[in-house]
Length: 121
Image 1 (cartoon, rainbow, N blue to C red):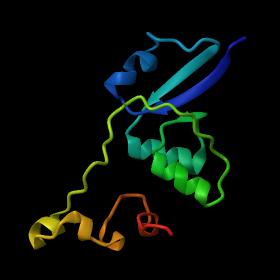
Image 2 (image 1 turned 135 degrees about the vertical axis):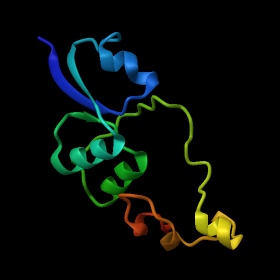
Image 3 (image 1 turned 45 degrees about the horizontal axis):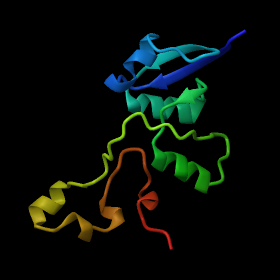
Image 4 (image 1 turned 90 degrees about the horizontal axis):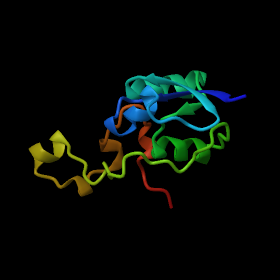
């Protein structure tokens, strides 16, 4: 008997074959949900509606640092591109200030409290 699992993920081209069933997971009856990433994060973190979820590494680390052991990460990185090589802000552009000079409280990342952006000793 196969294990029934539900996975939520954004509609990325590099995981499409898994989402549509062209590629199968041995021993698993996989139901896939293709949703916007913001909805995935919100619904998974608040309601745990599925067993497998896309989740940012930053959010996972923040949860674990806060003592939340209800999620377990597996080292699967379907996109092997670092998307965090730069931060661009209108403030920096208008003020002629390099982004590296901005303080963490000046940055806004939707869904991430400012104190998570600050460096920790």
